[in-house]
Length: 239
Ligand code: C5P
Image (tube, rainbow, N blue to C red; front, side, top):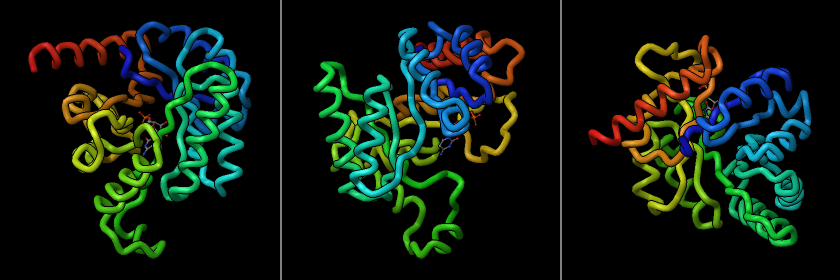
C-alpha cells in the first residue's frame, strides 16, 4: 500500500533491517527518525535506499537557512524520498531547503525528495503555545504554518488526523498531508491521544499514513500491515 509509511522506531539496525525485510512490498516506505539515525547514522538509510525502499528521513531540520540547506543537500545525496523541516524555521529556511534539494537532485539527475513541514508538534497544546509566547489558537497556527510551507514550495505537512480538515481548506488538493496517530479499534493508544483509524484518516484527506507501534508491536508485523491495507481497500470500495 503506497500510502502506508512504517516508522522504524527501533534501536538496532538488525531490528530495522528485519522489519524492512518483512514489510517490503506491503509498506509504501519506511520512516527513519532521530532515534535510529542518531545511534546508527546514515548507513541504514543507504542500505534501504539501495534495496529500492522509499525512505522518509524524519529529522525535522530547524536551523539557520544555510545550515538547513547543507543538511537537506546531504539527505538528498543519501537518496531519501521524503524529509522534513520545521515550518517555524520560517520562509527563508524553507525556501533554502527546497532550493538545496532541487539543486542537489538536479546535479545527480534524480528526482528531488519531497519536503514536508512540521507545523505544530502534536505534543504542544494551547497552554504550551501560550508558554512560548504565541497567542494564536493551535488550529490557526497550524493553518498559518501550512500555508507558509506551501508558499515556500514545500510538498506538504505532517499533521495529526484532527488537523487535516484545516489544512485541506487552506492548501491545495495536491499538497501532501502525512498523518501519524493511526490506531485501529483494538490497538493500544500509547501516548497518542487524538487518533483515527487508517481508513478514517484517508477519508478525511490524508495523503500518507505513518504507522509505528500498531505494526512494530504486533506478533506478526506483516499481517498487521496487510490488515491495515485491506481495511483501507474495503473502506474505499464501499465509500
Ligand atoms: O507508534 P506510533 O504509530 O504512534 O508512531 C508514530 C510515529 O510518527 C512516530 O515515529 C512518531 O515520532 C511520529 N510522529 C508522531 N506525531 C507527530 C509527528 C511524528 O507521532 N506529530
